[in-house]
Length: 147
Image 1 (cartoon, rainbow, N blue to C red):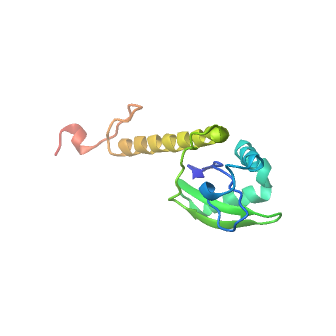
Image 2 (cartoon, rainbow, N blue to C red; image 1 turned 135 degrees about the horizontal axis):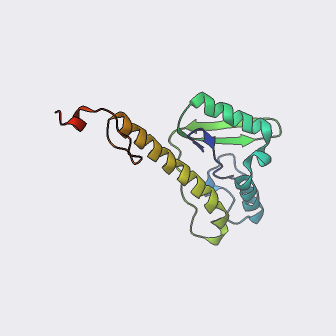
Image 3 (spheres, rainbow, N blue to C red; image 1 turned 30 degrees about the vertical axis):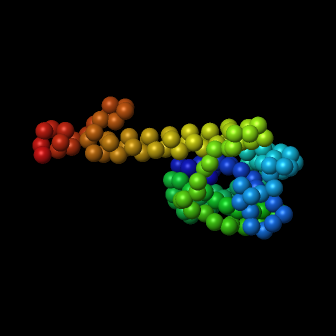
């Protein structure tokens, strides 16, 4: 996930089929796949390497979106981009102990989105002359009793 200029790992989906979605991937019954997912969530740059990280950062810079996701695959030398867009959904892990390792990554993403939205809302209020949570206000006709 790309949130406010930062890249956050969400998951690795491993499957023997070409069409992969996390919820249909071969993860639930395969502890080795979940271990690979956990390693990715713990240290994405180390797992995918500098070439792939650079490619993801270039995609992020090209999109220039505050919120977006990237679905991609890797081989030894390439990043295969499946899709990158602003409509990716971040679902919480299923309530099952097998997915507990995913909770910190989900929480980091959730916190980053929440922080970004609060910051953007504060900036919007300041620009409209409405007191922000930080108590900053600029001129606004309604702030002075004007219609």
